[in-house]
Each structure stands twice: as C-alpha cells, then as structure tokens.
View (tube, one colour):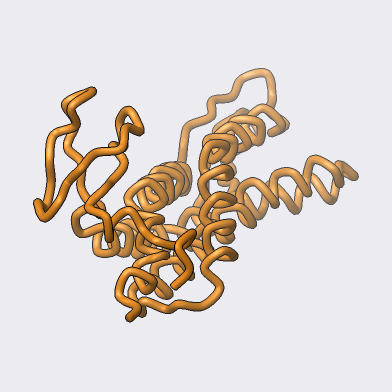
Amino acid sequence: MPAELTLGRRLGLAICPGCLAICDIGRHSAVRCPRCGGTVHFRIPDSLQKTSAYLAAAAILYAPANLLPVMHTNSVLGEEDNTILSGVAELIHTGSWPLALLVFFASVVVPLLKLFGISVLVWMSARRAPDHQLARVRLYRVVEFVGRWSMLDVYVITLLVALVRMGKLASVSAGPGALAFAAVVVLTLLAARSFDPRSIWDPIATDD
C-alpha cells in the first residue's frame, strides 16, 4: 500500500472529535484527550448500529410525514386538513410554480436523498467494501452539508401555514404529519452525526 494511504489507526493515532488534536491511543480502546479531556476512540463505538437504528426510524416515519395532515384549519368556512403534497398541489393550481418546487424539493426530495445517501454509506461500510472510497467520502460531505440545512424543511411547513387562505375567524393547529416530519428531520441529523466516516477506509487497514 502506498505510504500516503497509511492510516493513523495503523500508527496508533486518532483525532479527538472535540478539539481535533491527534492523540496517541496505542493499543488502548480509548483514551482521554490531553488537550480537552474528551474521550478519543479509533472508531465511534457501535457507529453503524446506531446509524442504522436512526435511519430505520426515519424511513418508517417518512411516509406518514408526507401523507398525514401537517396542519388542521378551522374557520367559519369549515374545517380542512392539509398535507405537504396537497400544499404543493394547491401552489401549482394557483400558479406559484417556483414556490411549489421549493416546497417539494425541501420537504420531499431532500429528506429522501438524505435517507438514500446514508443508507449507501452504511451498507458499503458494513460490507467493508474497498470500492469508490473517495466517492463515498464526497457523498458523506454532501449529506453532512445538507444536514445543516435540514431545519429548512420545518420552516417550509411554517410557510405553508402562512399561505393557507383563511377567513377572518380561523385557527390553525399542527397535525400528526408535522410531528412525524420534525421527527424525520431530527432522526436523519442523528444518523449523519452517528456515522463514523473513518469506517470508509477500514478495508485499507486490513490490507496485507
């Protein structure tokens, strides 16, 4: 294996997740960082198991998040339940195509892409696949970057509430879909954070 691909794990070195200091672990399973006192591991304990659990929960909640009502409107004109998809359809019907695309992308496409991206990372790391490692690192960086903007999805729901045409006397309450949607956002964030990207390079550490 080329010298430039030698892993710190082979040398007994690991990076502190708190202050990014390089720590000498040696043959220990974990040590205290001499700079910040945080716990340093070669790999995050049970990383793939935790990520898989968060991912499974998010995938289960994805369908109700998009199909159940995110808000319930009660006005003098009657009661109405609105889902994310019905909100997109209403925006298209009223001619607001740019806003409809924004809502659809932020609330439907982005969570689905995050679920797919993290699933690929977990599956290939669990198989200890030595293929496409640079591409997987780039995929992880994209997922991590998108994760920083995940709360935009929740803001989109707030925007949908503001766009609902109501009478003079009306009240709007969150529906079960809003709770499921917020849970999907949080769970995908936790899944991305619990995944240890260093596991992508583990096959190299076991090469002869």
